[in-house]
Length: 253
Image 1: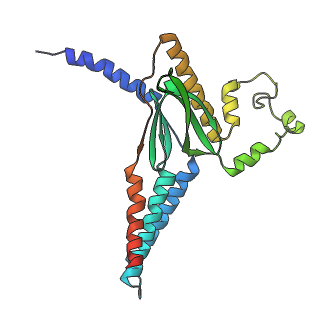
Image 2: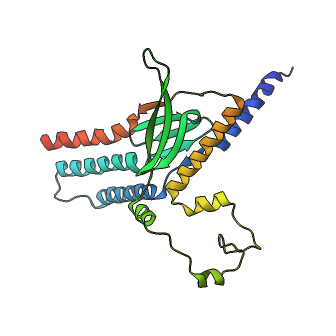
Image 3: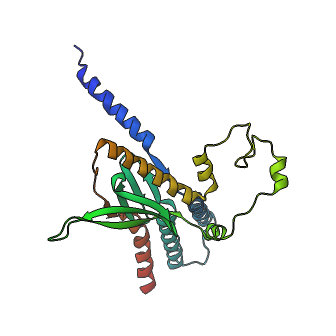
């Protein structure tokens, strides 16, 4: 006997999982990740050096202090550099900050812009006693998507005009945005995003995606899918506080 019903039920589930996987995007900047791996290589090199050569004349207290210091800074590097990211999926945004995790559905996101970090502005409906439901606008800064000082200085400068000799020397199919025709070009939206700094381009992409979800919800009459949530992330807290407390105890002993 063959039971086909479970297979029939599994097909929509597999299709839904594949659709969610296609919708999932992870956003983070490259420099903090490079910094994490450089620091990790430094820690490993020190451990190997200690294991091979040892520390002649060093007391157990000194070795413990060095190990605790390396562990504390490694915990900070993990929390501040490796861990932060922004995950966009079918339901909304997961904003992973150093010590807090936020979940914001697309349906409540009002806009995404940039300050010192990429900021997600969302609307909550607060029920005031004896009054009608009123909206409250809040925002979350995305630690992983920061605006560097160099980017701010560059944005403050007036835009440079392209040199005429360079424009005339380029073939038409390479000369994007100069009005020349006769070759393939990027779409206008893609050219605009490519001209932005990475964090600003990601903010624009997220704002566009939220607007599309709102447009679809307006046509289908869909409501909010899930509430906004925020919780403490205990793994980075432990990774930083445990070796720091150990160092403090050793220093006071």
